[in-house]
Length: 404
Image (cartoon, rainbow, N blue to C red):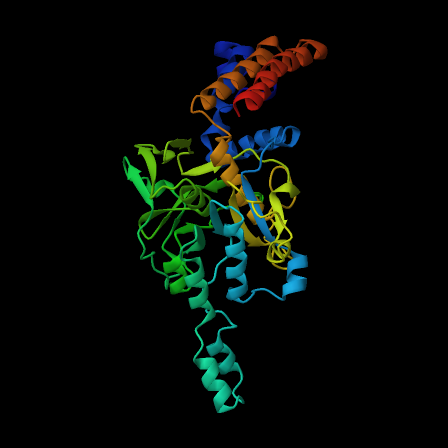
């Protein structure tokens, strides 16, 4: 038996200690790239660091948020509001110039303020009051009638519950190429809004996305699979409606998704239909209070040529996961940044050649250190590591700044 501590193994004896170490380096160092989860973790560390140093610069605000904030809840009352109030909010948003309105909320149950629900909760009502209430139309019917002619997209949520089914309304996604279904975020069924609201809306988009292992959101899918069909997410459907398109086209090939075409715009996507976008910081300029809009305190054309999202961020209502640039970011803010990313094509890219380049670079730098030998001065080894490492890091950051 040879002693590993002395480097007298058969491999070292045959090649010499330095070349044996170099051969092991070439074999072992690329192994992290063979693990998708480890590779993604390394990518996240780099992209998160770059975005922290250089978040996306925002000069214009094509997406606005109507924020059902704490002041709105305090003034109007607890959530959910009567759908007649929500209909008024949507009508005022449309009148203020919105190109399309996305509702970042679900309405799967009948409005609790419907006259029929009020009668059911008050069994002591006299016969005449009961008769008059039961003769009134439901808030859901009124809501559906009032949004019918407006460019409104309602939200849905994919589910894997055995009792759910796939949507009955046709999808607005057309596929050009092989079916990419096994690559996409997938669900067997979905949770929808009440039927009359679903039927009245001009668009339907899914809210689903998946956080990373650390709970942070870095990707949002542009499309998902539900019950064997491909459907758009909320951001894509809002953008489709704003651009006046009847459908979007998903471009695919044998390796999965290539990109999404909306009218004349082409948006590259990851192979699984997701977008890794370059975050900006949280921008208060994106938001207006729902209360100010309801009380006509805003300019009459405040949303001219804007896409608008409506959602709740009041205490107890907000969904605020971490992102690379913020410990907490409201879900509706994430949706708004997704639409901005699609409009500006500012997604972060991972070209397919980068993996080969990274493996080659790691082997090269490691090989330099190995061949320098254990007898080299520590200062020389430090220079051999720092100088090539810096030479690699500077172009990497430059590519992030210039080409994302």
